[in-house]
Image (tube, rainbow, N blue to C red; front, side):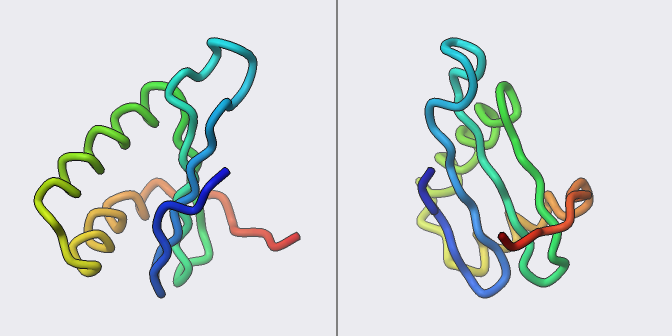
Length: 85
């Protein structure tokens, strides 16, 4: 588990070696909206697509605002409340 992005609005954590061997080869990503206090976990194909989209975005040298705008596109599907342990 590694935090790959953290701003005042969003946090993205990457999980590697997720699940049984070969089950989730792309690993997984947890995207948390700090304002809404909601999150989503992307695994499998969704994680692979997210990784590809992020790599394309990074190649354009985005600002923090651009990254937050990109992540904001996921807020509509964030249904899990963030729980602190």
